[in-house]
Length: 437
Image 1 (cartoon, rainbow, N blue to C red):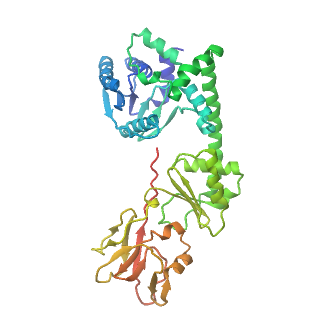
Image 2 (cartoon, rainbow, N blue to C red):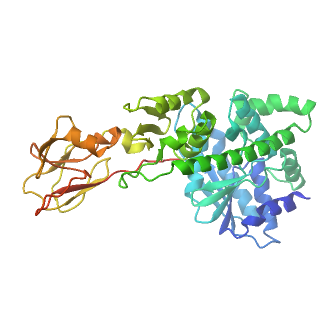
Image 3 (cartoon, helix red, strand yellow):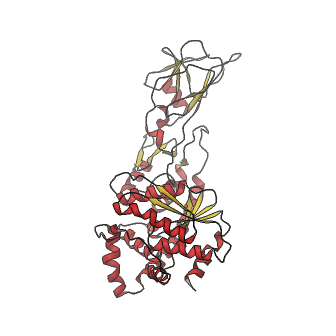
C-alpha cells in the first residue's frame, strides 16, 4: 500500500474531527506529513487543514525556521500559526523544551480538533531502546502512544508504522526541502548518540532492528493495557466516599489496597497517581512501604515530585499545590455577611448572627479553647480528635476570632443548643492542584 493510502487508512476514524492541525517543525518528518495531507485534501473530503510551528528560540539558526515554514505553507495553500514559547533553564533543556512545546500546542487546540505529529517507526525504536537503557518499566517500554488527549483536542501520530527511509524517499521524489536541526548531530545528547552511533551498527547486523523494536513496543503496550485494566479493578474497591464531602481531595481507602500483593499495590498506585505526579524510580517505592506499614497512630508522608501522599483515618490522601504551604493568617473579615476568600485556603462564610466588632480568621497554634453552648469550655484539640479529622487538615482549619476569643471552628459538627441558634463557620477547602496533562 502506498504511503498516502496508508496515511488515509490510519486517519479514517478521525475524518469527523472539527479540524486537522499539523505540528510543523520544518524538518523532514513534519514536512512530509504536511505535504501528504495537503495532497490528499485535493482529492478527499477532509477536515480543514492547518499547521502550527513552535519557535523555542534556543538556537540562532532556528530564527529562520518560521519563515521556511511560511513558504512551505504558502506553496501548499495551508494556513500557518506560529507560536513563540519561553523555555525555562533547568537540569534537562530537552525536557523543558518538550514540555513548553506541548503546553503551547495544547493551548491552541479547540474542542474536537486533531493535532498530528510526525514521529515514525525509527523514533519508536529509539524511544524503546533509550528507555530500556534507563531501566523503564512496562509503561515506559510501551513507547510512544499512537494517540492521547491533549488540551481540548486529541494528539495523533499517524506515521508510527512508517520508516524514516520511506519518508525521505517520498520527500526526494516530490522535491521537498526541509530544515536540519544542527543539534541532531551532537552525540553528547543520548538520543543522538543512539541515532548516530548505535542504530547504524544494529541495522548493519540486523536490518530489521527498528521494525522489531517497534513491534516489541506494541506488545508491551498491550501488556500495559492489561495492567491498567487490573489496576482499575483494584482501585474500584478502594474508591469509597470520603467521610467529609467538603474535603475535595483525591483519596482512597487503604485497606482494600493493603490486601493486595505488593506488585498489585504498586500497579494500582501507579495508575492512580499518574494523574497527579511523575512516577518515582524503583528504589523510591520504599517510601510507599514505609507509609503503608507505619504504626496506626503515626502520620506518615510519602513525598513525590508533584506533591505528597498522606495516610490518615484509614485513607490515602493526595496533597499538592496550596495544600503544601501553610496559609497566611490572620485574615480580617470586614464584611461578615459576605463569603471571605482565604489566601491559599479556599473560602469561608457564616451561618447565624455575626457578632458586632472586628472579626478575623486565624489558624491553630495550640492550646485553643472553644465555648460551646450547653457544654462549657472545651479544648479544641479534644474536639478535633472526637471529630476524627486528619492531622494534615488541622493546621489549616479556619478559626473565627474576635479579639482573643475563639467563636467558631470551620466545619466542626456541633449540636445546636435547644431553643437557640449557634454561630457556624462553613469552609470550602481548596482542591488539590493536579497540574499534569
